[in-house]
Length: 422
Image (cartoon, rainbow, N blue to C red):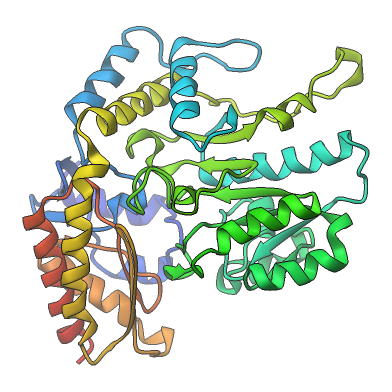
């Protein structure tokens, strides 16, 4: 199909996520055809810096030779084999790598296929753990306000973004909300015997608009859950794999959770794969005789897909061989310097940054005015692809972005905020 036919059929057949399709159907659309390094290329040959890592998942850029080679090599063996009652080489090798790089004490890896699913797994494991331990009253989860943990009903139940979640209220299970660790402690003092786990996004709440969490809050939540006998679930779907400057955000506060949820950057942005890492103590609670039915009755057809596992192994090998995290440090510093120039703009209310995660909050214009969208559309004309969250301009480029590309990204955003909102 040519470009015109592709656009016609997209608008005729596709239903895009988080998109008002009435606007989509009437406006011109961009159709990405190729990618190279940190650049997206559309069907007209126009090039764009991938300013949000293709929704926060691309790590080392597009068409990475090592990952391409790993996927092709695995294709020559087998594309998929069930993980239910069987195992395969890439999953075993990947689990070994994950256990080594994860916070100490996380020894078991359960695979699924999305960030939402990884959270669902942690919630269900925590709940079943306490049931197996005879703590039948522990049926409730404590969540942090403004949280986002995915779009399946369990993950929405522990989320807190009204715009996304309010309409589904009647379908959700009840949870307890807290603004921070201090509020969580007050809740624990009254209701500890009801709480299975606390779930949190460490350091930065992504979908809420890049909201920074109070320094030390994660460590305080860890102490609270240990003191009051509850699990700590850390959702690193967005923050994991170098986004905050360390492999995992919980390393900044030297925290080992009971469950660590990862996805997005796990395969370098190549294929859907997620994992829920758990402690040995939790794993052993599920062991028993067959007739006891203590097993964790949950799974996915594509759990531990061999192609995705092969991509993930190559992704982690690049981190090690190319010293990705070390090379990231000067780029984080450069990004911080460039953000200072944006901070002085009249239309900018606040800038929040942790590593390569950035939220540029515009003045509180009504959302219906689509100010963030206007900035995004203006950036496209200058060769930068971003996706705002309402009035928050999100920057989360691939870790592989060059300094020259980073400078262009910030310069274009600065220009577009100044022009598109004036």
